[in-house]
Image (cartoon, rainbow, N blue to C red; front, side):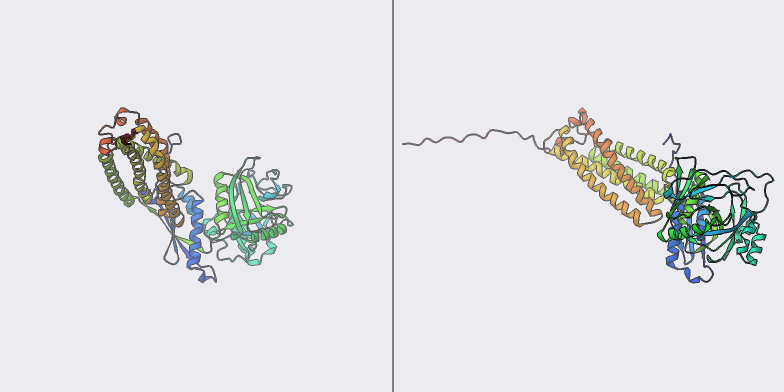
Length: 533
């Protein structure tokens, strides 16, 4: 914990505050009836996966009313990135590129930019391609069975303008993607079956404008997408895609058609919320049902693209109504009250152990301290590792675990006392009582862990924090009693204070009503009667 620098648990939104986002469902043109419970529940599920894909495991996503979704993101996470991912609520489409060009200000001496490369996973990794300049052509960049996510502008847009009508051509010609107001309205209200215009950034941070054809592949056709670090060559971070059976056929058809065209009409754009997030080009049809996009990705960029590909297909369009900062004042008061209640409960447990078990209470208290330190350490490490955030229900689960842990010690102590009541000395009593206590403890903890696991699976939101903490502390109870409590009891059984049955040891045979040791005695022989003849 100290080596990693994570010395305190990451707190949830109810304890540390965070960001609350309100999204309102907006029906698409001609689909007003799409706002229904089924679609809203599907949107909530996808948004949860999106946010959890960023490691925000304690985020809350829930419906409010008929057309609102509330997303609560705890402090300590990249709330801006999560906001962008959740707020990016339009459907994901793969559209063929008809034309593309740099928009707005262009640097006088553009520097070369690397291209991203995607390959059919079934055919292996292609060879690296030369790096084009910002004004160069796309000819000569040979790739074996690959897609290219082009980071440089394509040739003149006039090459694809003939495929669009005059109105769309005029809209494309006047499109200035360097202006945020223009980007927000580009392609708004366009159906998937219609051609459109869109904006997107290249690797140099410059905005490009796109003239795009009708959507050929839907986001629901992407079965899985992951960010993977390629250690076999210099590709670095790559994004792998797997399509459904229907999506694989559609993807093979469109890549086969695009491969026959000249640049930029051999590219297709991955469009999310009206913005082009990637624009690979095709050299050959990809028929394997999977593909890889590689290039000059950072880890964050690769994971962001993979997350969009995996969870980008929402059944509704959402508008961000409000973004507010949540304070932790109320949660802090509740946490303080909860900690006071936990301290009172712990004090009562210790008093009971001291009164009833006397010297054995020292072993129980030491075991509780070890369990508490392990719990705190794991919670501190699980924050950056898996995104675990401590919330009020999780604190409640940790308090409930005090009783579960203390119950295991009581079972062990009572088994030892039972053996002493049978007339055995302490050391044999510990060794004979342990197997019986061990079975009882394992069964009890198994039932508690099973209940926590079921609760974690069937619930959502903050209740999962309670279930996770309860399951974690139950596992730690097994670790502590096996690796600490039992060995400590075996060592103390050799000490005179406990072995002699001191009155304050909690193992006094006289106070326990121990039977005297059983000894075998010879039965007296019966007198022999003399018979007279």
